[in-house]
Length: 406
Image (cartoon, rainbow, N blue to C red; front, side, top):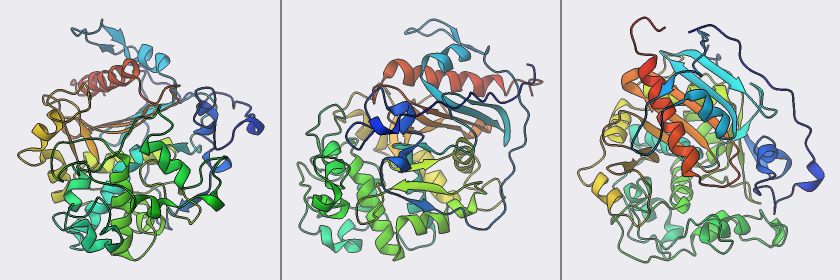
C-alpha cells in the first residue's frame, strides 16, 4: 500500500438564495445544505473547551483497491467503487489511533462542519452514559421521575432504559417521505418550516408532551427519533443545563476536539437532539475512537465509563429478540440496538452510529479500527449505499490487521 496525501476538492459555489427551511432536505440541495446548516437553521455551539487538541498521527495509505469479498447478495468490488458510488462528502479510517485514509469531496475540507443527522443520537446516548457513570442517571428509573412535564403524555410509565433502546410504546412514524409523519411534525413544531415559522411553532418540549402511547412500554424495538429527544430532555433536567453546555462539559471538551461542534435548535434554543449536531470529519473520528477504546479518548482521559461501553456491547438477554420482533425491516438479521448504537450483524465485532442520507461511524474495537463517512445521499434511506459501506469498512478492518500491512 502506497502513501498518499488527503484529497481536497475545490469548493463548490453555493446558491444560498434557493435554499430555505422548506427545501434544504430536497435531493438537489442536501450536498450544500449539510455543510451549511448554520445558514439555514438556528444553531448554537457545543464548545470544545480550552484543552489540548488530540493529535491524529498520519500513516496515510491507498486503501481504495482493498477488495470487498463477494456475498450471496453482491459481487466482489473495491472500496474505492463504494466511496465513488455513495455520494461521499468525506471519509476517514483510523487504525490504532493513526489516520490511514482522509479524503474530502464536494467542497468539504478538514474545517467543514457537516450535519450528522442521527449520528447525533449516539453523542446524546454517550452523554447519558457519562451521567449514569457518575450516578446521576439511573436507566431503570421512570422518565417522569426526571421530567414530570411528561406525566400526562404517552411516556408515563416508560423508563429511561426504554428510550435508550427505542423500546417505548409511543405512537410515532419515522417515515421520512411522508410530510404528515411525526418525524416531520417535529420539524414543524420547532419552526423549521416556512409555512409555520418559529413565532407560530410550539417548540420541541411542547411537542413531546403531545405524544401518545400505542402499546405497553418495554416491548419490541421500533426506531423513533422522539426517544432521543426525550433522552436529551432527561439529561438536561438532571444536569440543570442545556445539552449544548452539558455535552461540552462531559464529552466534547474531553475528546481533544479541534473545533466547536454546532447543534441546530428550536426557537427557544432547545437542541434537535435526535439529528441536529454538526461537526468535522476529524472530530467525529475522535468521538468514534472513544468507543473503540473502552471509553478512553485520544487524550488518554476516561470519558465514557468502561461499564457503559460494556453494557452497550452486550445488551440485555432480550435485546436482540426485541430487535428481531420489531415492525421495521432493518435488513440486519440477528442485530440489535443498544444505548443509541446499531449492531448490524451477530457475527461481527463492529457497531455503528448511523444517520440518514449516509452518515456513519463504524467502530470495531477488536481491530482497533474506526471508519467515518459523511455523505449527501439524495434519499434519506438507501440500502444500496448503506450496506456496501458497512461491508467496505468490514473489509478494511480485516485488511489493516493483516501482519505487515501497516
